[in-house]
Image (cartoon, rainbow, N blue to C red):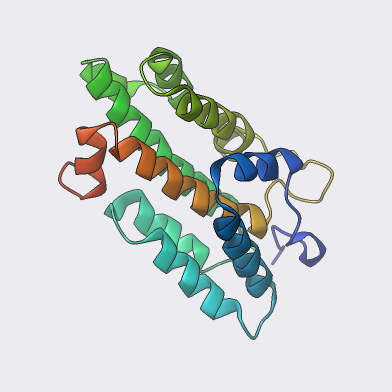
Length: 191
């Protein structure tokens, strides 16, 4: 069976994704992400690192976090579906915020990018900019781009680890500005 991420690339990270991490995450969070990424590479610490990452991510809302947790169990080799499912979660949070802020339930039918454009000047600028970068660098490529960038495959396990930390930051920021996002994260509303 062909591996999706070559062993020599497990610990690589796109410099733009790391720059986003430096903006969004604390030094302690970056250190923890780096530690988990390294532990995923070693057979002796892999299962512990997978479990640690699952615990950090949590288990709610059931979907798509349930799916993302399943995919974390396939790290460090299989990366795309974990990236994509974490992105789906952020996409749903954006839909919640857009639906509430714009008082338009049709926002649930729009794409991440379309909702984000509509949220310009309706959410904090830093959150808007982070979400825009996240969409361009990670989420959209996870769904549509199958070309590697100076390596054999599109995403590495280290990028998945950082994506978990981004996802949690977005969750924290969006539930702070949207009751609908908060209810979704507590499994009170279906999506």
